[in-house]
View (cartoon, helix red, strand yellow):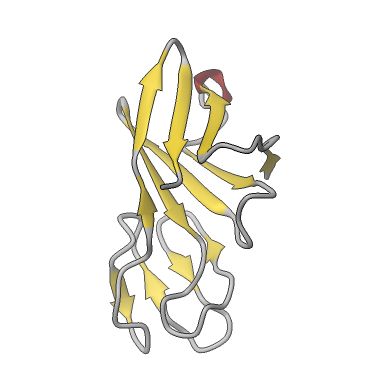
Length: 109
């Protein structure tokens, strides 16, 4: 997990070098701006940011190699945030991302 220093803006910035050979394609980010963590996933040159809060009853989620699990009631999500196993019915909240000057920027609003 990486703790990200939050400023008062609705942006989270992380160095793209956080991903690299031997480092995997997923990072869990924690910031004071949000109650739950964000899962940042790298897929080729694209990035996806998913809020790790279950859409069923608002419980924190646990990412694994190819799925995201809710330990409270058994919901499972894929790495696109789509529901794979209920009781959750809605996909995970995602945040837009962009890459500028080797910085991954996550827009929280």
